[in-house]
Figure 1 (spheres, helix red, strand yellow):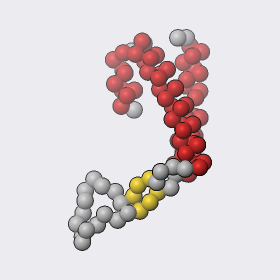
Figure 2 (figure 1 turned 30 degrees about the horizontal axis):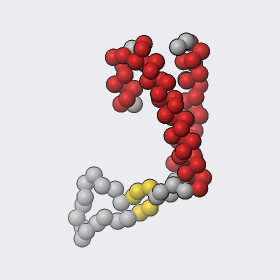
Figure 3 (figure 1 turned 90 degrees about the vertical axis):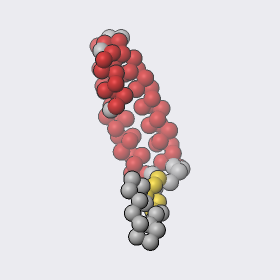
Length: 92
């Protein structure tokens, strides 16, 4: 672990964020009303994601791959440098 490695991980964040934004722009959302005669279901949404296909699926898989690699490396560094902050990384 060295400064260049940490800087490399930091430089990957915008790419991962871009993939995330791209995924949410591509994934389709479906509307399924849950209302049962005026009964409100608290904590449940009438909207859900459809199973990604095509470009959305391709973006999702690339996002997962890059994020998991980034998270794994970052997690190891945090654990070595400041192990007490590991729960903060997990929460974020």
